[in-house]
Amino acid sequence: QVQLVESGGGLVQPGGSLRLSCTASGFTLDSYVIGWFRQAPGKEREGVSCISKSIGSTYYRDSVKGRFTISRDNAKNTVYLQMNSLKPEDTAVYYCAATKTLGYYHWAVSRPYNYWGQGTQVTVSS
Image (cartoon, rainbow, N blue to C red; front, side, top):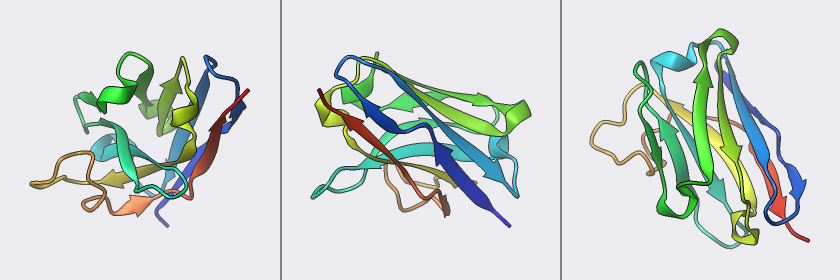
């Protein structure tokens, strides 16, 4: 059974850090493109970061560049999203997603991703 499970969300003060984990079962993560998305209340889902399969090229939306880092631990079949200098506008439910190929789609578009986790809540507030 193919499954993605996110963890690591929570409540943090502005300027704080969290590390989200996305662990796969039923398939090997390094053979897939893995994306992190988020959705805030009343807003559309948006791509946050992506790591390509094999060589592991990384991509970020502009608003998180320099603050978030995506990485992969093949031994643990897990992808991480390290989030530093968190801001209230980072508050959202964060999802990881996987696809064998993006095709012609930009990495931040949700359509090509076949597998999704259940999401983990991140709240940045004082």
